Image (cartoon, rainbow, N blue to C red; front, side, top):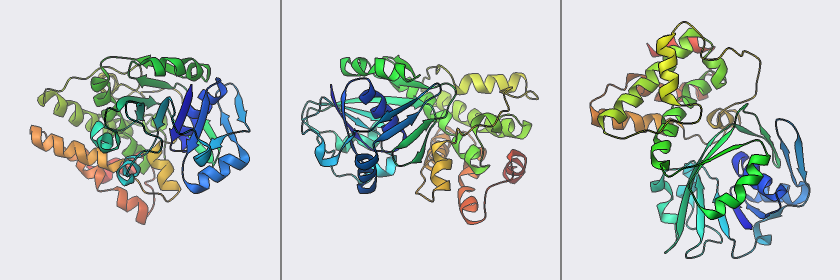
Length: 319
């Protein structure tokens, strides 16, 4: 199958690279610098049990004009800046990753077939053309579609769990609530598991998730449990054993979420928008969003002054 990947960041290179290794024709369309690096150096994927070297990678103008599937792996602000999707054809399936339908609606051509997916994983762009799958367990939540079923074996071969579901809207809401934790974790220059090892980290996480779950409950929006990283299960575990770590593993890792990677590289960040969106929804539902509101105010402090020393210092600043 001929696949065009729009966005040569960590997620786009990971999924596109695995598809290329699996025998599909894949081209990448990223920034001018990303295209240049991929064309000259190829692509290297660092996986849990092995690494993949793909020396020949198509980019930009080398892409075919009529792909069988367009995979869009762009951040929200990048989607808003686009006028159109390169190679998009009427009736062609377009697979959007980790975005909400309203962010992508203007990019779907007449009779276009939008597909949606969400990544429960952490991929780190070590340098242009080199991506590490840093999460210990990685999962894709996908729409049901024959083209995605064709790609699923290649993604599974790379160590990813692939779940196709009819209830993707409900999964998307749970995914949204999980992403609310990106901000407090990033403010402490930490990872998800290490943040939850401390009592203060669990206190912050519980406050953030409780506001989100209560908001969706009052708005009548159903949630579907995620295979892991599920916000309902995490909150229940914290409330049942508040003094015990949510994870017993304290070994160092590099599973930095996308917000922290953007902060460290001095790039535009957008995850705060999720917490701000929850604040708006909570206000509409009559829920006090104090944790999410206060967190949304702290990102500028990190950019100007520096990271918090840990969950204890952040928790004190929020209370």
